[in-house]
Length: 111
Image 1 (tube, helix red, strand yellow):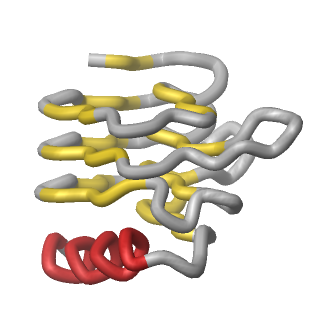
Image 2 (cartoon, rainbow, N blue to C red; image 1 turned 90 degrees about the vertical axis):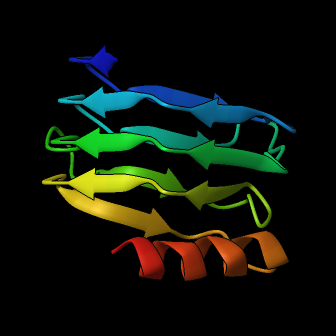
Image 3 (cartoon, rainbow, N blue to C red; image 1 turned 180 degrees about the vertical axis):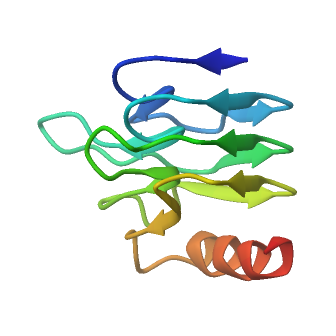
């Protein structure tokens, strides 16, 4: 369990081919799980998030339980993930890749 961080519970920048599974992220100030980008800008690609629960995150500055921000068009696929009572449950801003399409399809099925 990752809980009570002042910022993101888990912040992943320029991460490739990783698997995150079986975690609970709760009561973090910013996003529960955030795929972002360092400067200079470098995207994350081909990651999978499986069976993660995000609870009550993002209330410090209006963030999300699960966040896939630009520039991560194929940043992550979410499978069997649950978002409960976050400021915003999901925020998917990355565009342009098949990975995001699959991600959104899975999110709709989970919701």
